Image (spheres, rainbow over the protein chains, first blue to last red):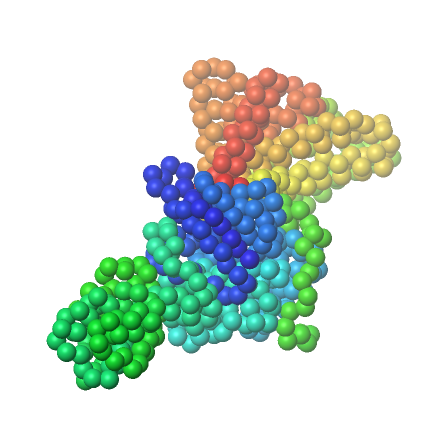
Length: 312
Length: 287
């Protein structure tokens, strides 16, 4: 779906590049693009849309090279829901969704038909003839989603789609995002700084920080790779010398009744068995501790600080 | 009430659509036609057109009716049908009203997109910056051109229809007035859309256009008064739009001739079009 190698993007006149040497390959699915404000999420989306030209490196989106003349045509195959409120206030939802459809290359009649259908899809069929100036925040977000879907894109970029929504509105929007992939077969790139949103819908995750990729992969794989936190259960509590040498295995968080909660240096659990064997201890169980996504994110962004903050 | 499918049908063909510039212009035209100001201007322009058509018809009656003929002969000194009369078809109050109409329409065209922040989203579609500014400039020029074309051609058609090629209007009138209408419309369109790109709200855009038109007219008048050369009036787009029918019909009078008119019109067109083009580039992006 998307692949890029050593991608660097620099804004005109900027000292530092906004994206620094990014390499990544993403498969079809819902991809969560996660990172704090200013991490480079919007810049990456603009680059993938062909709005920004790479200053170094390159890549492909749906088989089209970034920065090539064909990238302009590529925008007809992609849907984009911007973070900001890009709605024509004095037009009805139907009028503007049909308009965006025509701008994507649909003939007028097809654009009108699909505007009705896509507004039904996002749940705005009853309100489609009202000017959007009277819409609630949730309805406005759904109009933005509808305009991104009206031309049946192969891939859709959603930039902070739950911005400003209440919990119920957020739930509806995230359901819609999952429905877009499940029912329409459209690939989704969801940029957000809200961990819960990404955790709920994404099956792949890319964590950005300061223009670099801190971590990427499938949600489960990423958790596994980043989570070195295990609970070790020994047959008998360790003796003093064994406890003294336990830091060879990793940083100890807690010890009680033969259970040792530690962050291993090596993600491979076999290394714990090897350590036990070499120190004359009987290790009977290694239980990986499944981190929450916020712990994963914290580790990816600040590997040096995450342990200290947990201890604190 | 139509019944819709529970999900979207197969992917449509994206190669059948219209050029993006045409889509943009059509969408804006629909919005303009919905606005109530169309009724006001429609009434005024129709009244002015009927007045002029009535004149052509009365002139025809003069030859058919002895009583009216005598009356018209008596009024002949004040009812000249020479070059100035032809040039006036596209001049006088019509020009002032058209500037006001273009300010109301064109002043908001670009500024509204800036206010609603839809331009970046347009560029996220297969729309090039040139599509955008061509659509805005084209529509700003199309409206005055359509009005001017009515004033240039309808009286001529009536005259030719009633009295043949020897009536009140010259046979060559369209060859003189249609190019004038096109140049005036392009001048008005470029000034309106360029000035609109300087504003961030439609009202500010309208104020910009009116300010530029009236401000340069006043400045031209002042420079004329101080420096004594009528050519300074050519800095005013309003004076330029009044000059073209006069020059193309060969009417006497006016403060400046062909040279200042050509230079002034070209300068305004290039300046405001470049401004529009540069002010509507996608920020940061290289397209």
